[in-house]
Length: 245
Image 1 (cartoon, rainbow, N blue to C red):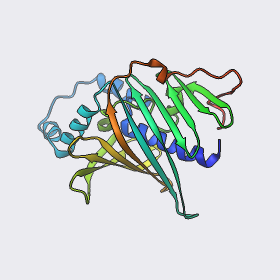
Image 2: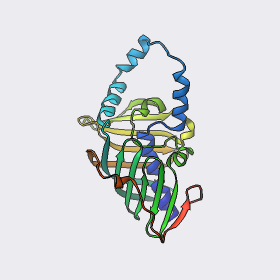
Image 3: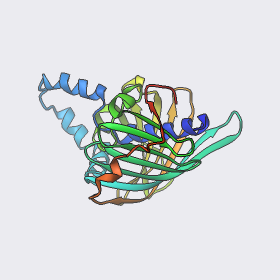
């Protein structure tokens, strides 16, 4: 697998995880800490619950409360220093709790698959399969383990409404509370009617931008569990995920 392709693909994978992530190891620790205390509800907290941002987040949470959903995606990563924009496209599948399948079709075929525990990364072109634990892989600096709970946006990000030139959409600016996530800003473009997340734009600590657009979202149950599992070919090169890709 080419280094540039891997950089492009893993960037988009992590960004979507950060935008739609459930409890990361960091969030879980915070939750445990907070569970020991029961803060009293204040008028300020009630006001925040009724704020425009909170109302939008609630509608997004309701929209993505489905057990499973799919979407087509198109991804761009501009490289201004060489005046090139890397692109990728494919389809994603998600199912609670923590199951996912990313099927990259271009620039090369790649599959990222997890049954909620094991993560397989399959590169058919070089017959390699990387295998490891999903939570461990996404816990290293990404702040995300699984990809199916938008409610974590509230706990892991400071959220505000950003300027938008389209009256049919709302742009949300997400600033990570944990600087270790590796991103300075993430922008979500949300459809005002359906509350689908149509686009994610992120900037990492080096100022590098990645854009992902989503189309044809379908919220429906998956009966075929094989979508979220992978049988390693007998002739494949099996590589632990802790080794460099």
